Amino acid sequence: MNSFSYELKTEVAKILPNGADESLSELSAIIKTCGEISKKNNTWQIVIFTEVDLVRDLVKTIIKKIYGQDVLEELTSFAFSKKGRYKITLPSAITSQVLLDTEIMQLDENKYLEFFEGISHYVVQDQSNELAFLRGAFVGAFSCNISVGQDSVNKANGYHAEFVFTKEAFAQDFCFLLADFDIISKMTPRKSAFVVYVKGLDMICDLLTIVGATQGSLKLQNEGVFRSIRNNVNRQTNCINANLTKTVDASVRELDAIKKISNSVGLETLDEALQDVAYLRLANPEESLDSLVKLSTKPISKSGLYHRLKRIEKIASQIK
Image (cartoon, rainbow, N blue to C red):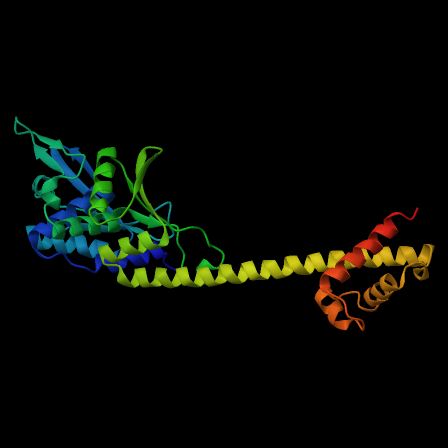
């Protein structure tokens, strides 16, 4: 069964970018988040890795539409997943141009290509491009600890979603990008990576809605309602169990005290009011104080019954 993160990426990858600018913005984010760039024989190479079928299709569509080229695709094993993952290699003939078009690399003053580690403002110059870039980063680097449906029964952790990046400058710029859409995020280093994370049900649902994962957002909201109901039921059950335990413990103490008095000095040594309470408890060993009040043939309040039972326990404690 696919994870919730996989489902979300699949839903977002169905959204095709509108025009060349959005396509390049989304491609830029995908390469920066799940791509590898290397240089061999003075030629740049771009390889993109993904487990999601529709992300593979999205990359193929963008490259074909913008550059009229086909990518080299192969399915490889992935040590950290039961699923295989796609290795997508872009044609070497267009690699340098792709790096320039996506603002991943820029020409310096000497006309040499150099990496731009943050997010270039050219690929997020308006909201449509920002959204395209955000979708690309989502399908490339998003993950969450959330399980929904049947799988969530034993996994009721808090709500946490994150993006894992290799460059600190990129992670910082991405926090600012999320802030443009009122998504509050934080960044933290993790080994050799930099993690941008979003916490809380409402904030994560807003994020999913923004990137276009509306079905995932609705599913997560339903999960939130389910967890809330389940937690309330658990709290009520725990409260009932705790009260039952208190009732049983109190009843055992009271019965022990009554039997101690009966076996030593006799219940007839108690005054009439305490005798009535003692016989009432002996006749109803498992009942609560509320029930004993109702079962009593003589008028007595719950408070009065409680204090008489406590007096009986005190008398028993004084018997050697």
